[in-house]
Structures are given as C-alpha cells and as structure tokens.
Image (cartoon, rainbow, N blue to C red; front, side):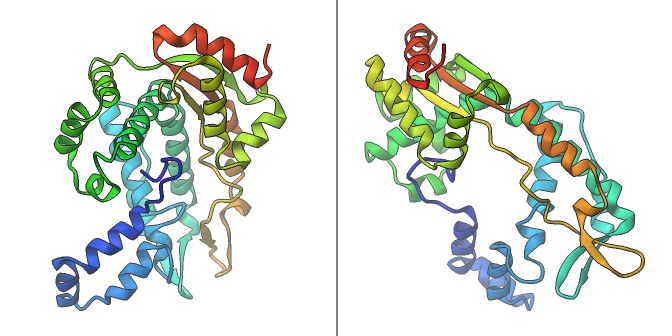
Length: 294
C-alpha cells in the first residue's frame, strides 16, 4: 500500500501502532525489553536500527530466500555467514572482512530476483491492476486504509469480488490470469532522457501520463497502467566493513561488484504501459503521441 499514489501508509508506523496498542507491548515488557527502543529500531534508528531497516536488513534477507523458494528461481546466498560475521561496534552494525563474499552473494541474489521476478512484466501488470482495484475501493468508500490493514488474504479477495463493477472485473482477470497486456515497453536507453528524468524525479509523473493518455483516448484511467521499474541499487550500499586492522570502511571500497550491479540494473530497467487486450491498439497510438514517440 505504500506504493499507492496520494495514499500515505507506512508499514513501520503500523508495526509500531500494533506493538503499542496490543498485548505485544506487555509481552515485550515481561522479557525486559524497552518498548521505545524496539519502536526506534523498527524505524531504522538507534544502534540496531540498520538490522531492521537497511540495505542488509532481516526483512530483505528473509524475502529474497522465501520468494526464491516459492517462485522456483534457483538463487540463494550464505545467510548464516552474514549473520555470523555481523558485529555491533561503537553503536554501529558492521560486517567483518571475512563476510564480504557473503554480502556480495546476497546482492547478486537480490539482483537476480529483481530481474527475473519483481520486475517481470507479468508481476508489474498484476501489481498495477491490484493498485487500481484498491484505489477504486477507497474512492468509492467501500473500505478504508484501516480496513485493508486488518484484512487477511481471504477477506481481501472477498471484498474485491463483492466491491465495485471494476474490482470484480480485476478479480476475475487476476484469477483467470487474463492480465493487462503490454502496450509499450521501452528500455533505459530507448526512453528519451528528458522523459526518463521526469519519470524518476517527479512523484506524480506517472499519474500525469496516465491522465493525459486517458483524456486523449476516452478510456478511463483505471484501465491504463503506466509503470517504470524501481531502481533497487541506490547511489551507495549502506553497509560498513570491519577490516582485520580494526578500521571501518564503506562496502564499496572493498567490492567492485557494487558498481557493476548498479550498472547492470539499468540493463533490466523498463518503462511499460499496460491495458486490457481489447484496448491495446487505441491506448498504444495515444500513448506514443502523448510521449512524443514515433
């Protein structure tokens, strides 16, 4: 839900809310844990915060292995080696020098999962369809953000199938795997530089393009998905390495692999426009005109 346009929701803040307002806080207190500290760590703050929210946090380490297993993509990395070479030094989490290769293995595994799974066109299309359906439920006041947070999978699919005409349409298509089709697919170097900067730099650029295509094609925005791959490798990897001589340096200074992966992610970056099969031709013609493409 954090990716929904014009909707504010934070899973970190929701986690803190659950801890503070349920029996969990009592259980943590019984174990002698400081509730304020725990909440601070969830936000990525404090001396252990980077373990919970960082480039090498437990969430990322978990979902890479779990998603790899359930999607059948044969990637793995040495999770135990990373954990065993972690150390808390001067209120900062560091990785000992002997854990460098294990961290590189994790970054490679993450790169493969993004390239083959998270950024696959079917994944992006289905996720885009779900976002459109959720927004429709919210706009029609059928559910609230607070409702969605409480739903399990069964509740969510029930409300999707019983919601609006559009959400029923989406649910049926998702279950039959009749996804929105690719209207347009452009690689990093195929997209005009000015348009690329606008898409990556402006928060509402995607919504603006969807609206313009909708207005010029007489097709509702909910049937048009404009999508740009997220860049999973940032300008730096926030991991510190503890060398044998006791000095601490950034991970990039001991691994040339980081820059290679940062460049490689652009090879798999895509700008997509999706629409139902029966609308592809119309949306395609208008989209090219709106984007100034031949």
